[in-house]
Image 1: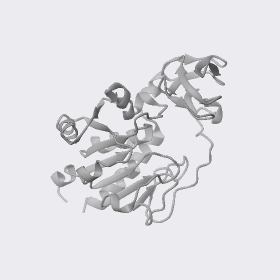
Image 2: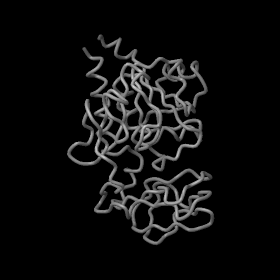
Image 3: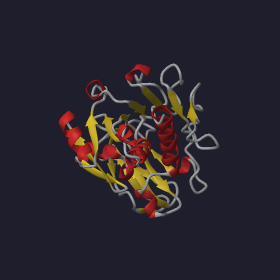
Length: 269
């Protein structure tokens, strides 16, 4: 396949959270045309580095790449012409019937398959647990931190979800804030703010949510959304480096590298 043919490939990404956005960044910077599908109220926490923020704001920017909310095929094509990433509210991913993507990446990270099938595109990739390569999808990408992170799996599954957040600065579960009750979420701090241990970061139905460690607020749920009890709603980075809030993580980049490798294996022949 020639360079031009590679750049003509269409890649559809289900999900616009941080991991998905890391994949989008790497693919777009490699010359591919990418479109994101999302739900009407995305629950991403690391919103400063998530293209799904365009669902709320209409436009967002991640590491210099602009994402725009679109409503159909013509606006998708216009975004590509302008070097932007289209973000379409399309929970059922019905746009695949219109775009006929060459690659579909399920980057929802639901820890289960919510409906993706091998027949959805010539190359279907699933991120993390919940998919079996060769049955549900063609390729699975490992998302668990450790020696296998970002590996391309052609047979079998990714490692099961441990339920334990990755170690950042010596902290795991302590850095992740979860809703104390179910109900309407209201943030009291902004991404990038310095947080002291014990400080109120947010409220859920007027119940305060306090930080358990000091650091920088790396992510927080969008105001007004409904949080389920124990749902992740904020993330404190103990390394206290504000610039880390504005760039995708090493984990997202490793996963993105696996996706790019899988695409090139399929089409760069």
